[in-house]
Amino acid sequence: MTKFFDTLETRSPAEREAALMVALPQQIAHAQNYSRAFSGILKGVDGPGINSRAGLARLPVTRKHELLERQQAARQADPGNRGDVFGGFSALAYGINMPRVFASPGTIYEPEGTRKDYWRMARALYAAGFRPGQLIHNSFSYHFVPAGSMMETGAHALGCTVFPGGTGQTEQQVRAMAELQPAGYIGTPSFLKIIVEKAAEMKVALPTVTRALVSAEAFPHSLRDWLAERGIAGYQCYASADLGLIAYETEAREGLVLDEGVIVEIVRPGTGDPVSAGEVGELVVTTLNPDYPLIRFGTGDLSAILPGSCPTGRTNARIKGWMGRADQTVKVRGMFVHPGQVAAIARRFPEVIKARLVVSGEMANDSMTFQVETVSDQAGLDQRISEVIRDVTKLRGTVQILVPGSLPNDGKVIEDARSYK
Image (tube, rainbow, N blue to C red):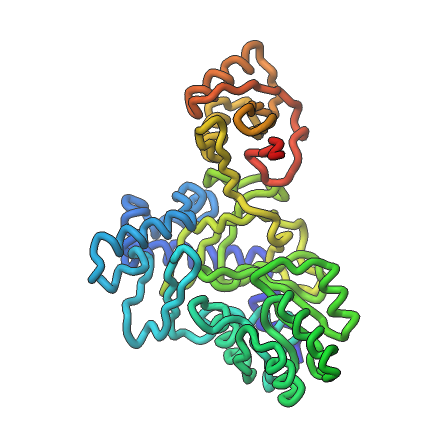
């Protein structure tokens, strides 16, 4: 049996990019025609003409908080308009083509369509070692959030049977695993640890549970090794309720391979500007899902593209995984300062390569230092930047001129270095 889910995973990078750039203008035009939100967001855009990453980068980024705000505004404006509970983003309406609606914290509502493997999770399950004809124990939640359904529909598409364990009832989960003998586990890594510990306490062996696909929280190497010592090979995937699968881990354990159904960009936090290769920034995703066509959706998560391709032979790009949150908004002397403001200040000076705002001192007695990398330290540059800082933020700040490469590659645009004692 092949070690790849399908032939898409081993396409040449050029072939994949060409296919994505053929699909991109079609998806943008589809979103403009069938998503009320994007008909407004992308008003005046020549959708069929956006067939390159450069063209895509010129489109606005829609971030999660904006999606929430649009959903809330639409529901408040017309509570009886059931078709607009999604803020105009869904291309589907209630009925046979939308069997389920889910909710994420906020509350943000997400539609589920009827297409096979709607959330595209089968690929991640396959990479984790699951195969057709197996039973999988699914301990993701089946109510409100889509996690349980995301994994179950992927397992069904792979040809597996699922036990819908859900969350809680640890002793019953252990007994079900012991009696049904599933090939592995799906759920959060912390709950798997709880189950394994409970099984040891009950003196119940779980010999068939030899692999796991985990998500929704951090999966540190220490926990991965702890599970491996107990005969369980754990793999992680990165997904969201809005986008479905974004990236997944392979047996190489070198980053997460991007899914074949998304176009991923890494942008400078607070902007829509792509960063240089390898630089940490916000993960922005365009999904090719026609039912919920999100174009340049800002996840709010930090990551970076890894060089080269996966040693397993999968040729898609890889990301480092989750590296923190991109929303670094801080409050300084009663005023909010956003990453977008830092970018706006830097943008006024072409000689500035990279910028970072450091807030230091103590609360109520804090100070701002605007650090900039530049190859041209012109006389008076710091003063001119200082004036723009006050103009944009309404706050005073000092400017520190640095040589290129001085600032760390950690995705931070605003560093809160204050003492909170």
